Image 1 (cartoon, one colour):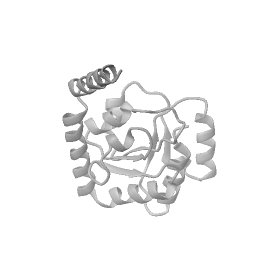
Image 2 (tube, helix red, strand yellow):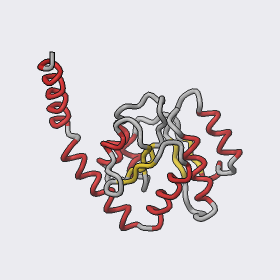
Image 3 (cartoon, one colour):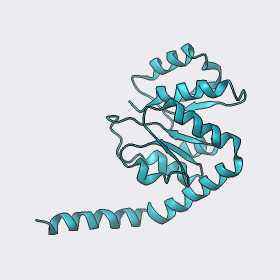
Image 4 (cartoon, one colour):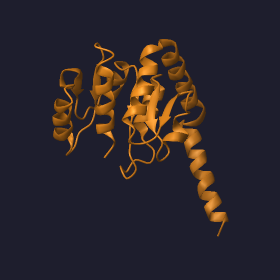
Length: 171
């Protein structure tokens, strides 16, 4: 799946240090009930919000301080646009090191890239950002700049065309 259980475990560890934090999960699907149940087992249900599927992501992004994308290998995500949306909103991103995520998130500049399935590392990096609002702001700003410089429609179209041409010329 997308590694939500690792995020729930990370959040459970943070609950003992910060009593005013909330976890917002915007996801839907067959594992939603399992995730809700697991949050109950971890005793974090009161601080977790399971929003389900939402089509008002701009409103959602304006309400969060840190975006975490804990994907795992085999989760089927190659280039998650939700990460780009977070960058566009100026939110620092913590992601796992799979697929294109390390190319999207510049470790220690636009956010953090951690080993997949590491609740400990997720927790550690979330805590760093909670404790340092300046770092949180500068990473969010750097992510927005990276988006403008590397991930506009024109830039992505140019990269795709170059890839196609290189494949055609290699025959």
